[in-house]
Image (cartoon, helix red, strand yellow):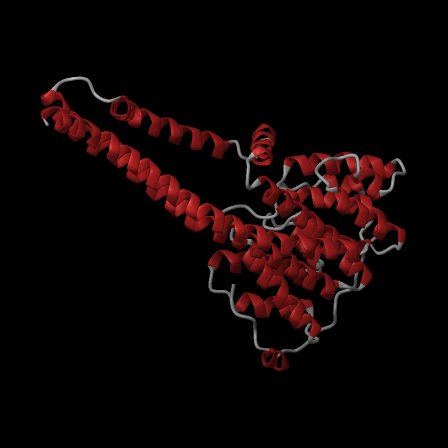
Length: 389
C-alpha cells in the first residue's frame, strides 16, 4: 500500500454530488448474512492482505473526513498504487461506484472482501456513519497486524535456535557418530550402555532419515490441502488448546479478536444476533466459532448475552462478568473495547515472557544433547585408556 496521500492534493479535485442511498434495513437479515459466508478475513497470498486493508480504510476515511466524495477518494487511492493486483481490485471497485452502486455493494461483489466488511459498511452508509466505520475498520486491522507481529516476534528467535539445534544433532548422528563407530569396530569389545544407545539412534536415523523427511513433506501437503476443512480446524485447535505454554496465549488472541470485532459491529449499530453471526466469520478458532453458533440461537430464544456466554468454557468468568455489567448499563460496545485493550496488554506481556523463557531452555537442552553425544563417543576411549593403564 502506498503512503498516506497528502491532503493538499484534494484542493485540485472537483467534488460531484454524493449518490443517494437506497437501503432497506429490513433486507439486512440473518439469512442474508448466512448466504454470503466467508471462511476468513484474509488468506495467505491474497493481494488485499490485512496490511493493505488497514491502509486502504485509513486513507479512505481521511479523505472523506476532509470533504472529498467517495468516487474521487477511491480515484486518488487507486492512482497511488504501485502493485498491479491491488490497483486492479480498486479499479473494479471504483467502476462499480461510478456506475451508481454503493461502496458496500461494490465490495460485496469482489472476492477480496468479506461479509464482515461490507455488511458493516452497509450499516455505516445507512446511518450516515460511513467515515467512522471506515476508521474503526482501519483500527481493527491495525490491531490484528500488531497481534500477529507479537507472536512472530516472540517465536522467531526460539524457532531459529530450535532449528539450528535439530540440524546440529542430526549432523552429529548422521556424520560424526558413524566416524567413531568405525574406530570402535577396530578395537572391538563391548561398548558402554550410553554409547551403544547413541549408536543405535544414529543407525536408526541413517536408515529412516529419507523416509522420515518424505513422510513429513507428505504430511505438510495433506494438512495444507485440508486446512479449510472442518475436521482439520477442529483437530488443530484442539491440539493448540492442550499445548503447554501457548494454550493461554492462543485463547487470548481469539478472545481479543472477538472483543475487537464485537466492539466495531455494535458501534455500527448492528443487532446483537447479526453481530455474533458476522464475528463468527472472522474468528478462525473452531471452539469459539461453535460457541457463537449456539449463542445465536440462545439470544433468539430470549437469553441475555452474558447468560449464553457463561455456558461455554471458551469464555473466562471475568469476561462474562464484564459483559453482564455492559448489558445492565447498555454499554456493551464500551466494555468490549475495554476487554480488547486488556487482552492486548496481557498478550504483549505473555509473549514477551514466553520468548524470554523459551530461549534459555532451548539453549540448555541443546547443550545437554550435544554433551551427551560427545560423552557417549569419548567414553569407550576413556575405558580403553583405563584398561591399558
